[in-house]
Structures are given as structure tokens and as C-alpha cells.
Length: 58
Image 1 (cartoon, rainbow, N blue to C red):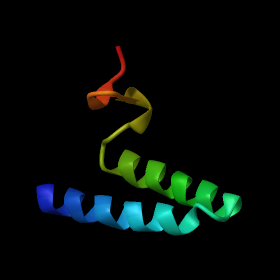
Image 2 (tube, rainbow, N blue to C red):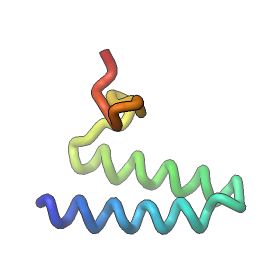
Image 3 (tube, one colour):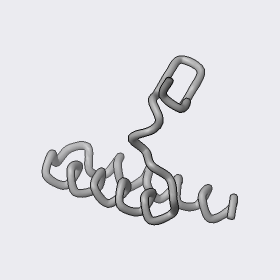
């Protein structure tokens, strides 16, 4: 499972980098990431980016 998440992280990173120049494509990519994460049982809205990295919101 860890390898699958690692591969997915790489694919998401590449996709978001490519989408940065096109706001419409970026929003579509972000929505796809949210949908994929949710289907895996990960609710991205529960996390925040902090100085220490990605953490659960308090």
C-alpha cells in the first residue's frame, strides 16, 4: 500500500506541476486529487500544511 501511495504522490506532483500554467486545468487536477484521495479513505480537508509538514487540523 505504501508503494502505491508513493507512486500516486509522484503522479500527482507531476500533474500539478504541469497544470500550474493553466488555471482551469489546475482546478480539474485538484478536484481529481481530492476525489482519488477520498476514494482511498483519505479526507484531505482534515489536514493542513504546517511548518512541520502535513498534519491533522486541530
